[in-house]
Length: 400
Image 1 (cartoon, rainbow, N blue to C red):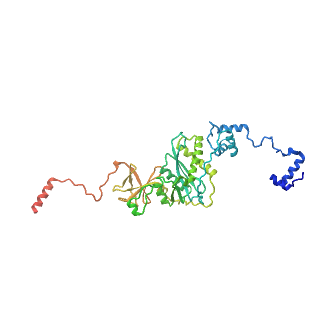
Image 2: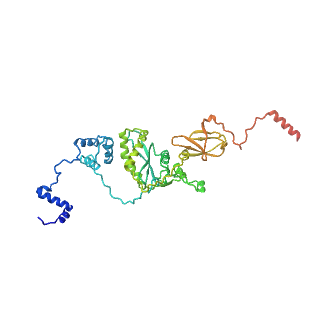
Image 3: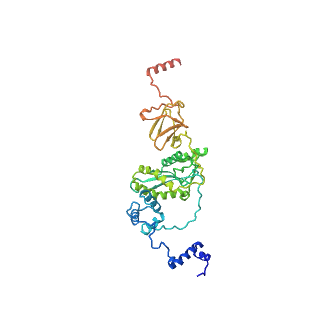
């Protein structure tokens, strides 16, 4: 009608002036029918086929193999295992329309202060253990020991153990050191495995020493800073990892049919690689802070449970209900009254050291050990001949 110019019409419709001219030209040709979208009544080209829709609902529904997976995890496994490619939002809408998934309940907002990630990989690792029904009753209960890098969110170590024990953390430290290097610091909870609850003895106070657990001692010797958290929220990155793994990992272990800890541990390397490819982020600083282990370092000396023993005169010490005989060594011909350390590695092997020198030894039975008297102990009395003693007394009286 000429009442509105092109610029004003474009502003009112929220389109460009060029689009207004197109709409005006089409209106002159088709009239009011031009206001109806051209795709009205047509089947969308990206619409799911009915058979594919029913297949997805069967897999994700009650009794299906993916019945309790979250939407993101389900989307990944549909592509990986079933070769079905579908968008996450489309899958989420499909499941909610079918009543197979519910809308998430929003928790009340809490005020928290965000801690920034460390800049470079290797600056801070968060470590923890998570006891959980990882095998869902198909096998024994287990605790998952893990480590995650704070800068990248990369999972560096996962291993199933019967309980959260020091062998699991020992394997963690050794594996991370061999695969990546030594980190600058470790963030952990106040578990007694990681932080000794003992009070220092008077001797330790005089020497300026504090009691340490075995894992705490290893961190101190390797120069790794130990940071003990006062709450689970303080090490939230690994706590959120447990929430994700208790959802994803348990279901993938179910799908693979794992029924023992050995089978579960064999499954973990592939899972870690897929998890890091999906969730890990590039750190702010591309130059990592890992300290590489020297090629000639004795792994068994550092990454082991260590106890000391004093060597008796017969060079045989007791450890773990066993008798260990020290064999002759050219560098240390005698270690009597000196202390040696017994190093037990996670695989169960034992190594004996005097300082950092590795000592040869062998196991013996109690019948093979014949302790000699200590040098300052009196010798046993000799048998006395009565006749000789009488003659000696007679000679002494005669001299008097």
